[in-house]
Length: 314
Ligand code: NAP
Ligand code: EMF
Image (cartoon, rainbow, N blue to C red):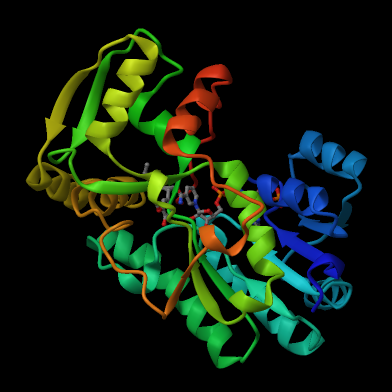
């Protein structure tokens, strides 16, 4: 597969992270198809995509024939469907099997490296659904790339530091605040995901986005933020035991975010494993590209505060 000739179909392309992938795919010159529900309320972004040259395909994942026809038009399928739709990807996989032409499938992972983390039960149940999709793709022998993008940078800065409330100076520190976490700017996730989706070196590999300048503790992040803004934050620590108790007492699905925070900021699960030969770290693959560092990410954020929508867990 020549990298510059791939036609790319994106599911969930109107969504939070999917929209960065659609824009990156168009920017990198790929014929780009966006699969969206006929009654999707994301009309503004669909109009924007169309004006940029994307081809909009309207349908539902349970419309099998429509799915097969859409898949037959392209070389690469990327799913950025939201968490509640994770198991719907089995329907996409069925269509890919029937169509028989797909050179690469990227399922909706884009978080912690799910085959190398062990989490609190609510997050474990979340990850189990994503693992089930990975195993089904492997079993079907469809060429894949599994992407661990770690923490969406602007999303997590917003969540941890709530910069859209400049007067809100009380912030929560999870555990000691010293565990290292990996934060990646969403625009970079878009570009690198399109690059790895069309790269022969990443076929049937797990790719991790973990450049050294993007590994940061919560306390580092807070002091960087304080230095750049001149505003000081009141930190309240929540202990590991309190986090575990919350994960047990909150109803489903509200018990998921707190369990994710436990993995990322108490356990350091995005940064605590070696990247050996069984994984590919994306940053050295493309000398012409660079991930924005955490320092740059804060600058970007301060210039143009992005207010990410909250994630869907239902
Ligand atoms: P999202 O914005 O919530 O949704 C993506 C798209 O899914 C929507 O735009 C919509 O497209 C489609 N969709 C929504 N509801 C649907 C339904 N009921 N049936 C069918 N399709 C529906 O997704 P996201 O938050 O970007 O999440 C994408 C992936 O990133 C997930 O795997 C999630 O776990 C992961 N994630 C990771 C992080 C991180 O920090 N690493 C943070 C957030 C999310 P249409 O309206 O066009 O049909
Ligand atoms: O709300 C979240 O985290 C708490 C702030 C969820 C949506 C984020 C998420 C992050 C992940 O890894 C960092 C979902 C899936 C992930 O693997």
